[in-house]
Image 1: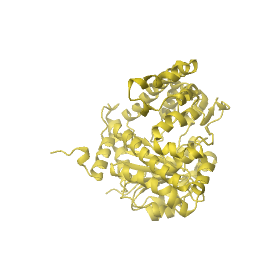
Image 2: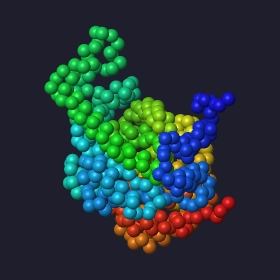
Image 3: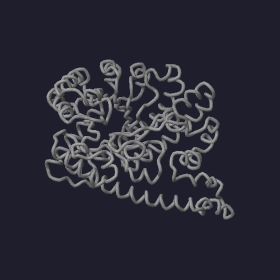
Image 4: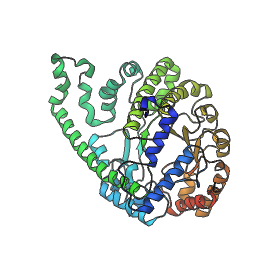
Length: 448
């Protein structure tokens, strides 16, 4: 009798997720060649994720917003018009041979963020000039130091009535709403809607409706094009976005200064909150992955890098809650992709505690020889072609750098040629082509 999901082991669940990648439901390939190429590319990814030798080294090409620039458009243009975005990316994919399919799915809709009055970022035309290619994070304390108890007691309520009104202007009326757990009987009914009886409240609801319509259009246009990539033979590993609990609190709640003060001033409150956020993260990530039949959960590691905190602080505040989240994802058969921003040379040995084939590392500035030596038998590793080289170097320099990386990291399998950042602002097409050419020439494994 076939096992149910709950009866499967972690390895069996992972194999099932691999099958979802290899055999996606509902995809009608454009032709026989597209179907064949899909299988070759998908198997290449599965092999490298399993830390085995594929047919050749895969390449993660950091296209960024290059398709918009080549179409004579700014980031502001394509963020405000999904049809222009798709047209630019479609033209780019048709005119280049990068063995990959790029989509504008890396971008959010500017109209949606404008309507929501999102305060956590600035983007072209909203806080920064229209011709800027990128975003700007607005560092701040969006959770006060005396609000840990509120977060720990009921994180969803804290998010709904405290945090979100601080980062979305449109969410301000929700601050006045009664706690949802207070609404248990008819006598509490008015408390649910009272904030929206005001002109400001009704305006917020109307703008939420407009934002929802704009998001629906964006998803339909961009999502349809992403699906087209699979039909043309390019696999796309669905998954979820995650963050280390320390980064969740340190990035967008307490801020960098706030959380580092808290490590000294109220460490026990911080540790308790990290555990709560870990549980919330696990539930959110697994729900998203299971709903989409996803394979990979991606984590940008912001504040755990070498030099950000001492080894003791890393062992106390950063790693335990992150490991708890990773353990839960691995137990559900998911892969975890860790983007090690900055250098992680002093961290990776203590992080190498998971079953073989569970983790994918993307290294920014770490020593790849050291990474291969420590992780090469258990983890898929990728990186670290410098963004500066892709932006300003010559193709010959890029090609030579990639050759050395492949010679160092490819033996035994489990290596993806990639930049130290998934999206390089100002990337040059000839340098991206040099990366692909290097993989095709130097990254081919002997036939088994």
